[in-house]
Image (cartoon, helix red, strand yellow):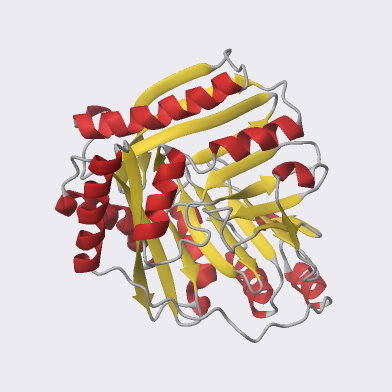
Length: 373
């Protein structure tokens, strides 16, 4: 826990109340919260990550980059570590006067009932068999009433204190939305001459067991292998053959575990090449499915809600070319008087609907156990 928790909370609350575009995050295993604030509302959207070469700030991209939702870049005009925040920091923030946006996003009402989810998963399984798809991700929304914007900062701080191995974030962009989460999945990280990505799939409840003793069913092993195969195919397209593969291993993420394979590559890639790699990796089979284009079509057809930025990607970029991008998972959109918690799971032709529902409930508990404590 940071020593100046009260000052940090006040600073982040001031950002929210005054409609600053801002971000706060804690990288995995860093134990340090970094904050960036854009002091005006002159927001920049982008098509390709390479459009942002030489910039310092934070990117926020949707799941479906062909949808109405844009990819946004938030500048870090004010850039602070949490430990640096004091009363002077808050006074500095208050000296800026961004245009206040009185209209909060409308409350999401498309909560996925048990019955709706079962109808969707049944249709998805039939289509998987008919069109010979390997896997498609079905997501749903759980509405948390009575937990809205007033709870956002405290929820973020609780997550940062509880999930040291996750990418914990709070990002707010006026007229776009406010999101918090604790993502277990790296999309692409490049720093210290090393590029990293992961293949993550499969979910089980830890339930007091030791992670190394978890046994995985064939369906889960196969799901994770599909993600690994996809990533390795992308590497081959770029003639990236010299990489270190570790896993799959059982990886802890709060009260659940996943199967994870980590890939490390010697960098040698410029920002433009990294941008192309991000474009080809996103969305991975872990959040979309395989084949990717067919899976995306099925998601657009079957899911009644708008994923928006859930299962998109987000994270800091630096002018020196370093990037730390994560998949927007285990996350919630914060609304005025409620939070919309997004969860999903991989569906294959042999999926059992009740088991898939239970898996999404497990993932939801990763956040709920902390923010309701």
